[in-house]
Image (tube, rainbow, N blue to C red; front, side, top):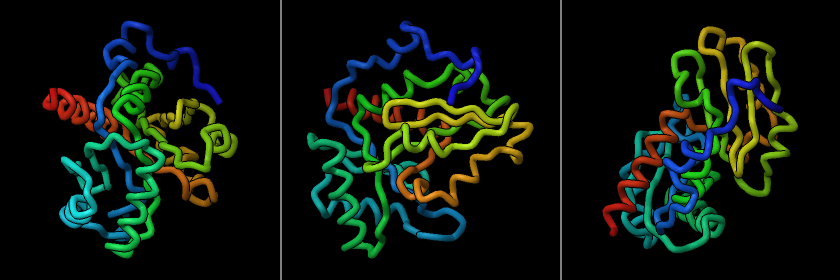
Length: 208
């Protein structure tokens, strides 16, 4: 599914702002569905503690929705299983986790539709990060759009979803909740995504 011509992918100069050659050992873990609607309550101090005790380095959390920055040379897919095991065994919380490298998140931001950055007052924009074994193509095959309200695009490991701010109550994004695929995605608003990338940039720069 594609949006209109106003949402073309960013130009090469804009992509260069984030640099798809970003290389660092910083990682981002996105926990799914915690501290939402009074369910799956998890204090960030407890999250940092168990990850530090498990050997993860330079652990930092951002806001209460389960965003964790840390340092590791391991493959993101291997880290997903490790963090899920820590959460299940140490906190009795069987939570799905999506992990992205610094480079992967930079690419997700660089590849976002143009309207994600300049039109914050016009659109509510979200990134839907996919956890294996679900693929973005599988997710997009079940995403429903309301004409004139919703737009969606495929990315690398992420789907982009925009809702008109003045009609967001009519959006069909909420219909995903009833789908089995919903259990393998974690959603972040675009302000959070760009803030997390800035934090990864800063952490990587501090290591040099």
